[in-house]
Amino acid sequence: MPGDRLLMFTGTECTHCHEMDPLVERLEKEQKVKVEKLEVWHNAENMALLQGIDQGQCGGIPFFFNEKSGRKICGNVKYEKLREWALG
Image (cartoon, helix red, strand yellow):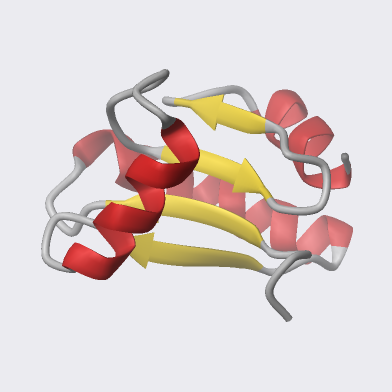
């Protein structure tokens, strides 16, 4: 349901995004959460959403946004930080 989503903005050919995939999968499995992946390089609607949330602060992907807490992560991070972000 919109408003409580955990979003990962990603790109099909984005190496750094793919490096985060195993950590996102671990997070989903261990914390019983769902991270919605939104592709931005080939989807203008997702890119517009990313730009609206990011407001030029990060300017790149991977970009993570927790709709419930408003917390953001720019770029690759360790699992502990990803878990902290997801749990609010």
